Image (cartoon, rainbow, N blue to C red; front, side, top):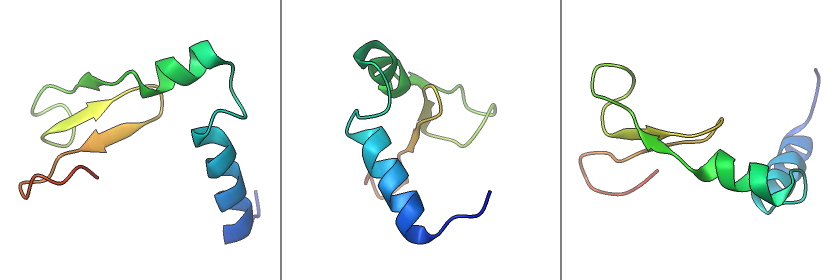
Length: 61
């Protein structure tokens, strides 16, 4: 796949604002679960393709 940064921006914007998936799948994508330490990045949660990491400074990335 070849794309530009504008293509990626357009795709992720549409994905994150709910224009690509039905509402049920959109909710499932963001319904993240805590990942047990040692199984992936420490202090992280993971959903269907979406993840979140809470660094030691406390800011969610």
